[in-house]
Image (cartoon, rainbow, N blue to C red):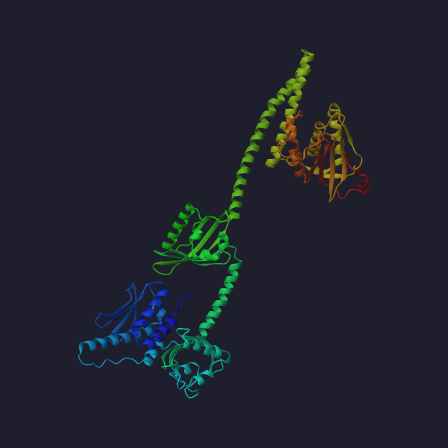
Length: 639
């Protein structure tokens, strides 16, 4: 239950005094309620004109507030936190009246103790005067109801609040009931009957009363039965009444504002929160938005009930940084910002980022308003970017190294090949037949190595962006025929038949002529190397889809295992052929795919182990759509 308001504390204290006729318990009741509201001990002192302490209730705390100057008596309220007298306006008149009454009661007791005969006590305020003094200016009035004759005493102030004169309405409860909204009469009577039956300590009810101008005003009525008949029937009731229309309207506006803020908070992915840190008591989460606890994988009730449930999820090194940042923020009132990790109950690690703005509530209490968001994906993305940057740097270093080494290797290798050729054709001192065979092996090995170095140089140029292409319309069928002619001698040595299917003679592609020939040579060379004696290699040129022209190289060789197809275009990957007898470095297909991509094309492969492979190169068509005759005459590639 939330702490009572200052006006409610005042009314409860007055009703308590009227019920028992003793100001001391009423003051104690008011001080306890005020201490609950302020969250710290409260005290009250009465001093005479000389500053001597006449009476004290509760501790003397650090922050005094003057209560009232009543003749020779001066009251002083002690609070746990600094507060202005204007903030306590609804309560101070009641405390002053009760304090004055208690001082007179003590003076009367002292006089009786000193004099053997009864002394005339100093005049004291009547209960009605006490109520009027305490409630003046608060839009609250006190009333007394005599049930025997249905007479409402002190009702004039209530009539004034509703715009009536005392002549316009009678002074009975029946007269007053005519002002109450018909829909509220039954509930009002039920609330009083529960109090009369002893079910509630006081009678309390809110209802609408008609103002003289026709408006309905909300009234809060509270009272207590102070006198009963011998048979237990109520005889006299005293109470207070206050116009709460403006307060209810303010609460309605505040409630709507809270609901709007809650709707907004539901859309925020992180957690809005209010955190309080009190010196000597630790920290408490006073508020968390609905979606917040999901960040930590905990129920909201558990998060607000015990902040340690969150604290235990945070690693100790992060706890130390957070606590140090909080201490600095509490001391300097600078914004608090901190990144930390959370090990959720489901075992998942999440990264959080928190920000809060502090507000000093008192010398001991500081409050932060802030926001916590889950930045795990952002942290992972930043890490991935850093990893990618490191990988890119390593790749550039590798590319530069390979480029330099390739250039360095080509010079001595060309010298070896040159001298090998000179020895082979030396007429003055011709080599023997055995030497010719060995020189031929040296030359073939050197040419193979030179080819590999060339592929490696091309790969490094492509990866570094240094490969320059001249894109122009190229007749794909013509380029295929020329390349096929260049490979015929190699195919004959391998006992492989090569043929070019008819069709597609008029098809033009956008390509670099030299690099297109290199792509075809790489594909045809592989088709021959990995074929079998008596096998075939077939080239086919045809129109493809969406402005593409396709060239297909089909062989009847060894084929490629399905597990190797996924990485066949990766550099230095030869799959099962790495343990075979066919020489190669696994660079050719990587270069082929990269060159085709530079020419805005694609390479696809379809293979079956033991039955051969089919590589398809798709390149953009040049010069508009191909002639219909060419499209119709293009046969399907052989399988």
